Image 1 (cartoon, each protein chain N blue to C red):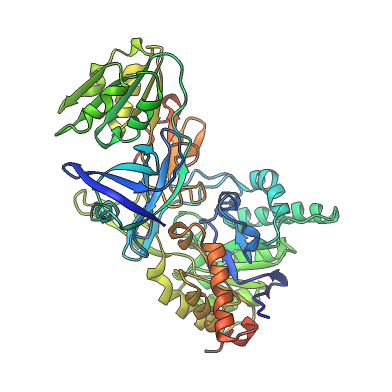
Image 2 (image 1 turned 90 degrees about the vertical axis):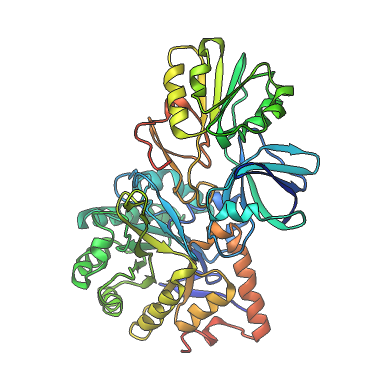
Amino acid sequence: MNTVKSNVKIAKDVYLMKIEGHFEGRMGQFYMLRAWSDYPVLSRPISIYDIGVQEISFLYHVVGEGTERFKQLEAGDPIQLEGPYGNGFPVVQGKVALVGGGIGIAPLYFAAKQLQQPDIYLGFSRESYLVDEFRPFAGEVVCDVGGIIVNQIDYTRYDAVITCGPHVMMKALTERARGSGAKVYVSLEKRMACGIGACLVCSVICQGGNRKACVDGPVFAAEEVRFDAEHGV
Amino acid sequence: MQNMACKVAGVHFKNPIVMASGTFGFGKEYAKLYDINRLGGISGKGLTLAPKAGNPGVRVWETPSGMLNSVGLENPGIEYFLKEETPYWETLDTARIVNLGGGCIEDYRIGAELITAHEKRLREGGRCSIDIIELNISCPNVKEGGIAYGVQTETARAVVREVRQATSLPLVVKLSPNAENIVEMAYMCEVEGADGISLINTISGMKIDTRLRKSVFHNLYAGLSGPAIKPIALRMVHQVAQHVKIPIMGMGGITTANDVIEFIMAGASVIQIGTYNFMNPRAGEQMADGILKWMEQEKIVSMDEIRGIL
């Protein structure tokens, strides 16, 4: 059992929670978080926003019962973490673009800190948040509110594009990047039960058959994912 | 000295904690978290003759004290399992249960024959990877087979009879709470030569998205599990225990050592943990410790002292 250090509102329904303790994890990995006993039944998979000295932080969007409970946590409250889980982002060579949509920016901050000055594209539907936090680690930062961020990218400039956000955004990005030479990696959000590959709740429909978002992903080469077949994402 | 061990279908279980099919993969995943040899047994992911991709769309939805799942028996198929997973199962020191599903009677029969032949070959060489076949006639999430066989006793009888003839391995039949008559169904299994009964599988349920005006699940209905179903499961185990002599693996919403004791008092020989694995991934070892502690507190030496006392 760990302890909440802080839990701060960043924007409407968006919170940044810091938890005390020594944690490990690679960029793009996630933890299963739980701050209740019986209900909700399942833990919540939340990607690593950052890891610091004796703390880990998670950026989350309040969308349901679990995240509503996270929102109510205060410094000193207990919380349980299992992880790190998932494959994480690949260590890519060359010029990289990170593209986040809404709460999909969450795993990109930890990645931005570890990659070599990637260009960062952040798209929001209503209000932007944490954009300035990315600047020290970025080449260029492009922020868009209410528009279509994936239309603002010249994909031919990049060797790799790493993206996390709404399914439709990642699908559109994958289509636009096709033929550009940029290798695209998508971080998928799926409902999960176990988080460790045992239950098959989070299957992702891929070219070679189903794969598990929790252990084979959440990061997949975009060319593998059958976006048209994927639904309920 | 407390002894948690018991026998089901002639197979030794070092304690009554067995991990339920569909929640425990083939064991490897949880073996990274704790020593799964501490468990009484594991039941692997439900297998069908041909690999299955499972159901599209939403596969899980939470409910008060429970969850609905619509995984739809996604699995790599029996032949893959026998080739790729049983070498690991050979190394395990816990009862190993293969959960067998099917689309038609022929599928069940061929599946049972393949498993039995594989195990026979191994045992001739002094090795062993499978202790029990758990026949799944109760999955609510597949259109063919599954629950289609698990509701009517006479329909189920043909499957149980066919598989019984196809295997010399101990056979346990996993029953659906949606059965027309759970006692009659269990009794039929005993008459047809089953060595044990597992119950209950998930209860058919539903969740409607009122904004979209449709079920959240592609298959309309899904299987409800978790603490919400425990009272129903406990009642059914008790009812069945009154009418069959073969052992029962009880399951449904077990989350505490006390829940385990309840099931054993109702007549179960061992219990299975399902959804609770998702609530507490270290459930297995903690539950085994909890049972031992309870026995020490209550000065119970053997589970036989409390089994079926109601």
